[in-house]
Image 1 (cartoon, rainbow, N blue to C red):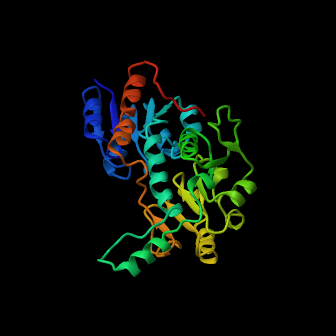
Image 2: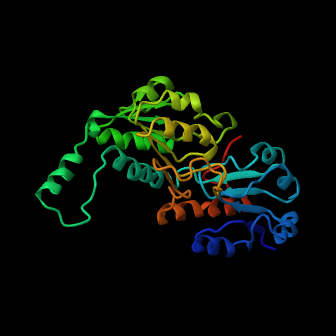
Length: 312
């Protein structure tokens, strides 16, 4: 009999079809009764962002051999529990890097170089007023971009920003061998000097509320804050207070805590924050790249080595 695999969230259809030809594939959400019924026989699980694989799930699946995460982050998987139970974890670490970098640039650059569009016929006076109002105090080659977390996404963002003329400061807890012309910095200096700060850290527990009131208090006046990493990295109440104290400051948030956001979300309705529904990775190419985690799932089930295995 082919191995039983449960897919808990949507993947590109061609990826699901590919896996279904090689496994006994069942598509059902993790909160469903069907999932609980199938779990004891499952040899593979394929998940995305909103499925948590904790110790309880792993121990309820005695035949489980592999968990595939269609995406880069694996903080919704208990790696220690998987290791103890001989369950391998595979993911797609570089699948959406380009898409996220594009999103950061697409949302950041208009805030650093704002301009009004023409919405009606204008006379010479109005035309001149529009042109004078569009005067930007600094060009990109006079601005500093701060990047916190200089992994696959952060380093690519830094490399592109440098080619556009930005001075790029970065901070990372690891030793960085290739800096692409960017400057290693402590967080205090980075926050004080940068016109925009983009967060690209991982989901480890110590990063929770890394961006707190003290963090925002050090930021340059009027700076842009961008978070596409994890929602809980930024203290949303502290950020809301910061945006109220510094009304020229702006924020772009693609990730939130919790998701979806509720009516009590402190950033909801603020005029100087743009909230997106976790879409930085939503290009067709990135989605397909993430969906092909199924190839590593099938490899493990077939007794072969996967391309991208997560380590504890």
